[in-house]
Image (cartoon, rainbow, N blue to C red; front, side, top):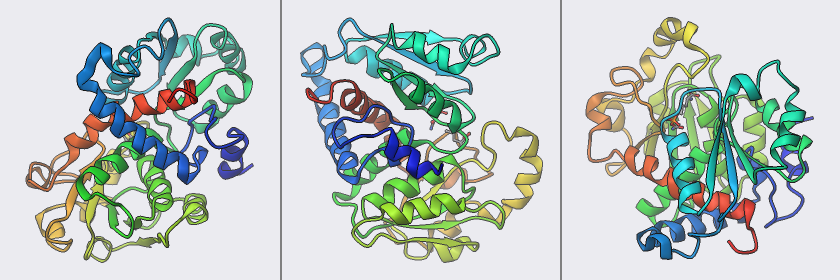
Length: 327
Ligand code: CP
Ligand code: NVA
């Protein structure tokens, strides 16, 4: 079954999404609505306990299951749940994803206790198994080897704040065609943003992801793949990069440093983009590798806006999944 078909299966109709495993679990309208909601909860945060969503998860629990390291995703989900009035339950990966019991049993236990589980793991398949086994459990992708949809939602909100409207803009993504690149391609296509991706041969966006982005593209959005970073960045409105070595690929780090050497986002490359082009990175960043210190610390860099918005977008996302009618 293709990922696209799986996404459609777990999402019966607009407005009542059970899971968020992929940007493809959203129709473009859902993504637009999520951005609107995110902006609202961001503005409401100043109201603290008086915010309209402050008791939305009152007396309810959300489980967190992280099999890989995380600063931003883990912190922002925990804060989001607390600020929605709920409680977080931390699960140990060796207990919930080990040989102790099947994933389907873990999921069917969890749905008796918690509203949702936020999972960071290696294979997207594990998330699909959770989602399929427990009809009442909302499953949220906090990053897999294949996709990082929460990051893409936050990236789109951040760009919307800087640009007003996204349609017709161009993002150049330079580097590995990894999880962040896939979700960015999905979200940008849905919102009418052109994406230029420059990656070395063998590290380009997977064919299926190109096909998926093409299928969901609206407002004439185009996804174009390049090997030369300069070709991708020329005239772009934003330049995005991510680590050359994603979590789980550490053994390849030395080899990847050589393969990606000419894919660094530096001052020279930024000079080819539009004069007011923004620099983006999901973080953590490696200065001197995928980006220079000068670029990430420059005025064009919006990396901490992206990080801040993870909180607001994930809060909005949880409200949409768990309490769609009240969100
Ligand atoms: N960008 C991001 O997902 O950061 P963490 O790995 O720290 O969660
Ligand atoms: N592509 C990176 C993103 C980290 C947030 C990784 O998977 O490690």
